[in-house]
Image 1 (tube, rainbow, N blue to C red):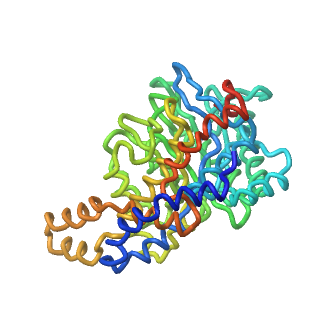
Image 2 (image 1 turned 90 degrees about the vertical axis):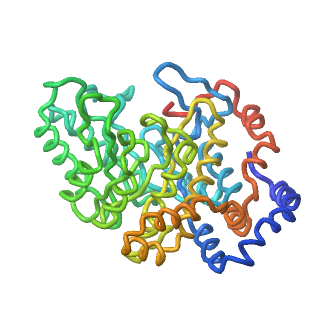
Length: 424
């Protein structure tokens, strides 16, 4: 379904007067408003191809209908999101779920929707129908060299697909690990994984990045071979300057201080990017900002501070991507909510008085430091987020417009009620 220009114009016209009243405070009283708005316009958040269908759990999946059946339909869905919010201008593909049959045609379709291709993602955590050897006991760590070779070749194939699409990064997430004590030699598993990653790293084009993702648990519940940020950092450091740690917000044990992890990785120049989501208990893959919005703000506070300290470009020097796929929401509505929550946290972090914060820290004024951060967090930045969307050509209220157009019903009519997105 395409968003027609008159639908967007009518929507914005109805809301414009109320929006201008809300925005007046910012334009009249906040000297920094224009800088924040421009940074929001520049900031793009990639949408993963697997998040466009209804997710589920190991107990069941309840499809919502109208799911994209092909890569072209997935690009159409991301194109619709981008037309609504003008902040979702990239798509991240998972191979082999979304193998482009004609790379040039796929690039042209993406360009039609104003999209580029973000990091491509390999998959050695599932056995595919035509796969010769199983990953039941691991992939890059496997005791059998033939299984490791199969996993290495798959990652190199993913790089080739990414090159054809214009991507510049490969994300490697490994489910490798063990379920029971004694099952695995930890040292050998680490060494075999490193040797496998070194072969993949050697296949990277000179202008590419390799993101090493980590996860504390699941599907293995005794050990994960890349189980925390320290393991990922160690791999990335050993691999070389093109390798970085990828932080998924759900891939930590409960109450982990993710903002401190982010600050350390930035300081060491090994933070590659993010998979945004939210969680209550573990890797819940919930809508970003729905459970712990203050934590999301604190993470962005460290990001803004650390990136500015290194004179980094906020929009392009790190990879920004959502990794969520919930089982009770319309996936497109969920993604619209996530993107806006990320933008809000980013805008709030841009408002922090960093000079005053450092003065409070140097004076050990704990109360003042807390007040400075909470003052920014409690600021309603939604008017300037909406203004950034408006100036970029998007909707003042994307979710409102999506619903008023009855978009999901139209998608069900086009695609059917029982469709299932690839990979789910």
